[in-house]
Image (cartoon, rainbow, N blue to C red; front, side, top):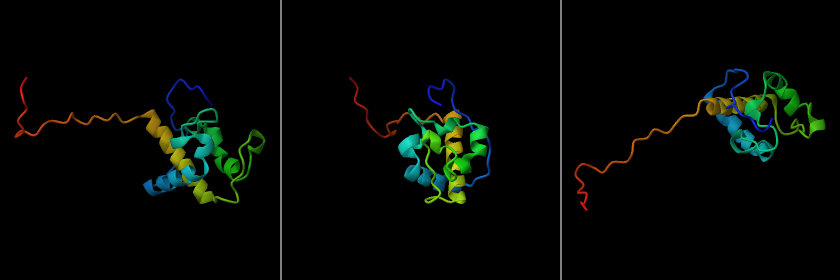
Length: 121
């Protein structure tokens, strides 16, 4: 899943509250980022922002059931439950959405207050 040319985009849509996404962020930083990268931006391992609909359909079986243990992805069944895995998936999808549509910081240039005297050269 490395060397992507296009921006990631969410492969599926799920209903998740802001609180669920926030919880997923915390859980991701605790259990996932060591391998899958900070803010879900991976290096050599799969960048989860690019996960396909097929991967999302198997998300719980991958994370909890060990469906990809032969590829080096351990099972987290002793550490996470289904609700927590859903929160992590919601966070990953939110990161794909953010990456697909980055917000450009358009803050105005700082201006001197009108009562400030600006020395001339």
